[in-house]
Image (tube, rainbow, N blue to C red; front, side, top):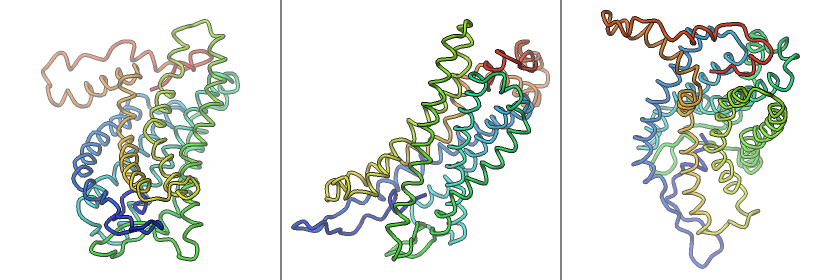
Length: 354
């Protein structure tokens, strides 16, 4: 987490060459009241939701397709990200009191969860593109083995993308409190700060936006030639919803991050603009961090099969322990749930999803 720009101690004066020094608003005081309860709720709902997704994919879907592999890894990415929220909640409430190693560990999980989540959403979009636009090729390429291999590569790339954030982040005493924030070498401060911002913006906004435009424009053209109206809708609605919601939650943060880092270039290096950017950074990053609990909600509302799988999981593994003699819970799930285990070929493949 880039606390240097998003959750700093704004209790000092900054000179912007104005007649009086700029007194910055203490965003931390507001964050100390709002973030701990908010992050706690996000952690609880997100952890339960993503854990249910993992159990559903493993127990019900049996990870039989490349899409299942990517969805599983996306849920794991969200879980890694969620594990850091209690620590950031504690940090927002007071100060960082858990030492340097925990600081770097939580920062590493934050960035790895962030980057891997983006990459798996991109892979899911490409997966839909192959299944619909290149259906014949997809029958050979979209295998579980290929999904596992690309997932391993994706995790390695996510770790490499996270390394600068991990290496330069440390816990130290700053004024009256201990912080967990990035500390770039003084001689290379601007280089690394600009590099981090550009990396997050390119990987977190520009790249997924480019993939989305290219893939979904081709998908739309292909589906317009498809006679089955129902399949047109079901083929991409889940992955499309995941991608769109990602942009709604994270794009504002990326935009504010660029404006904050390059204030002088955009003509925002004055006291009033800087104060507004401080507040905007806190709001947009908090919005982005709540995204990790949203995907299970998308599955529940958009993925009809997921609801059916979840019902089966509940009846087989939870309800029978709670109500062993209740006939309703001992019945098998709907017949149509069993039917989704058939092998998918041709047009059937494009309608599959969680």
